Image 1 (tube, rainbow over the protein chains, first blue to last red):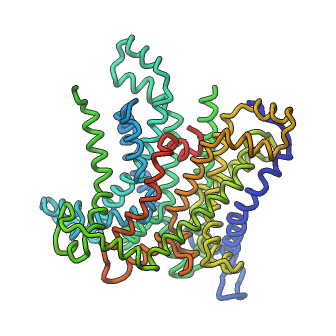
Image 2: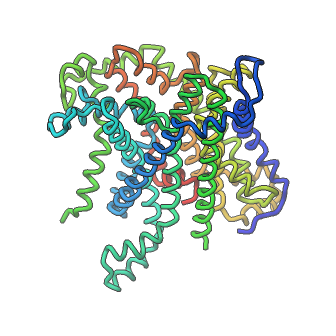
Image 3: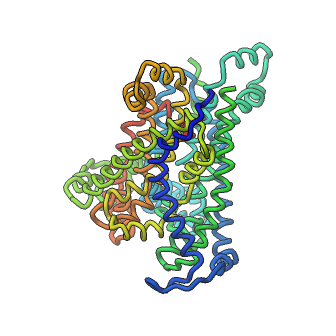
Length: 293
Length: 267
């Protein structure tokens, strides 16, 4: 579709621009301001240049949180994407079952994020949780299951929660991609006598590429920002073993009031996310183009 | 009729999906003493005492009302600001349109934790701390961009000839926009409203930081209950169940658009 060329369109964009800028620019400038000063109290501050950045870049806690974050987001993708595709493939193509599946799948997505944490506390606690009591009664583990006791258990619980929470999103996206494939492709495959694996590999997977790219990037970025669920479930513990970037940042900013380092960290974090955003932006635009072509 | 293996697998998956939610529902229908004393797969002595507690204690039910107030405010604001902007992006080429569209997306993707500190300062400075409008405004950070992206997806599906015909017929822009264009994309407006509602409803970090008592939402109330001693699991579970209700009620209407909304209108 050819668009009209007119800079008057800015009048339509302006209100939205102002309200988002109010919430985005001013705070970001404040962060920049904090990051280059040492603040002792109101009106008492010293310009320190890039000192906080140097300190944060060499900070081993930040490095640990960053690697933890990459590991977590990577594992999340490895589990959720294949699982989501399998669910989408197994879903019915027509009839009342479609609506039922969609509604059940969407259910975890509309639960407040910290309530997700609460649900999983109640579900996995060794004294009252179905999972906790269940797995301990089997007596298979050396150390009884308790997500506060052992880092491995905390990680398993967090990953299970994350997979439970967000795999439906991947499935919904993959299903939308599958439904957009014209029936003629499958008829052609049947005539050629293609196996179901060949149909998947040569027809369904390439046709889903656009939505799967969106799914991968969306899951990667959102799991990179994860805060409320681990905050409610483990609080970053035991020790610091589940302290991801956001949790560490909030700890630094609100519990220790290290404004300078926290601000420098914020900006580093923001730049990382900005790079991912750009990749995501390109993917979104390409999907739009692919379908119209 | 032969039941396929994949159908069985799907049913098992859905079972696992429902199980944690069922467990919370189960807890919410039992008293705390009962929960701690007995392990039961279903509530033997069905009791609604937890729900009655919530609906009679102002610190609980006001938390729901607070959350609903700022969520509705935010949804209305997001739609009002996003509708004209989305129209501009879908119909016009203008200076910096691509950059602007990308910049909006970065706000949807920005870590809320980054904005935490400056928000505390900003909202204290303009004397809006602990008000509903503060949370509604803060949530505009990600909901206005989200709404613009989703609406643009829907608007680009409407042929431009409709606009041209209307302008030739002598419609002014505002009249065309309100009486012809918005009714054409009403499904899109509904879906966008749902997603704004949902993302505002599920958010915790801003809502907890910007409120103290007067506007404290249910999600924040629940985290404070967790840290208190003598945790009442039944009450907590009942509060959790009630937070699922608003979303679950409207899923049915947007079930076919869930993927489109999460993919920012691009699927």
